[in-house]
Image (tube, rainbow, N blue to C red; front, side, top):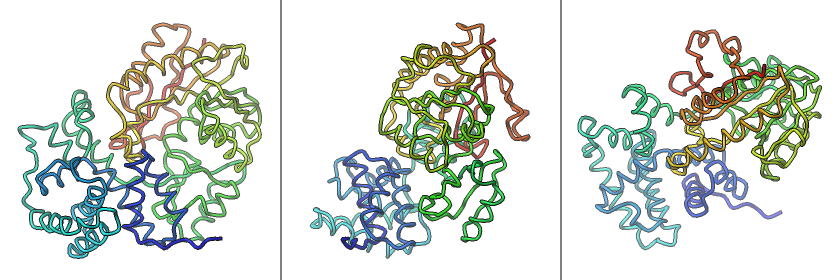
Length: 451
């Protein structure tokens, strides 16, 4: 076996960010690739992760700062130099535990590891200029241009800021932007087919992991310090699944009973699918659909690791679903494809990849899937529609449109599934979770029943 080359944190971040820029790789996958192919100690892994996610999160702001200091648009700089400067500027403006002199020095040394090593003096000058001007920058004015001020301050595309200001107050919009930039806690779901929460909490605590029970779902555990959880023996033994509290809540609200016939129409990678199986005590049948074979393999791998035996995967677009495929179902889960704007804090890439015009197309796909799924639900059966977004076109508008066209369906009361502190909130056309209000990923959940 070849010996892995050892990397420091900043070089690892440079490799990951270059992969993100050049190949369009998502942040988590880019870091996983670097960590798999190179050797880093625990502290360097932590710093590399912090820098990489920080640069992606604050990319718009960093480029605005770089443009101000260099006097030219960031996109006009050579790509390797721009990535290196983003790494340096992120540390200088967002990390307070690293001495400024060390940041300047390591940034100059980092550019020497690229094909643009001859530009080290330029990078040195830019970093020193940033250090001199750090506390006297001409930030956009909140009073004269609120959208630009919020976009640059919180590093979100102006179109997102505008959308949210149109339906929320300035204070609430700012709170949402701030929450999107906060590092979320990790959460996992106890696999109740193999253990219980108290036992798993004790097991993880023995390994010096900082864990506590979720107050949102009974299977949930929160972690503040975790390490690489997929390498933990408890993960390998199938005792838990990495999953957000919002996502766990979706399956709880569907609430399938043992022996049911269930459809998970957009199942990959299988977190909710295997949760449904656990709620069903591994009794009954779950048909798990997806449009990509490699993603269905993830469902199968998760099911095998967790000891789930009732899932059958099928390669099928839910927009083409008819009763001839699998008959009718007692319960249906529709965790539909969406803009993902509710999970920006976990996937900051979404801010820069998503376009506003895509939301309309996604909403039509969501309506198509819901219409087809409605046709394979048994009378008296229940259907949960969920999205990891906060946009009305993909949430309440879809349900309102569906109910207007399908009076045989009715909304089901779901407050009893929610924590007591949320039960008094308005649940008119489903329940909308927000990071800044609920401390969890942004999700929309509505439950319907066929009369």
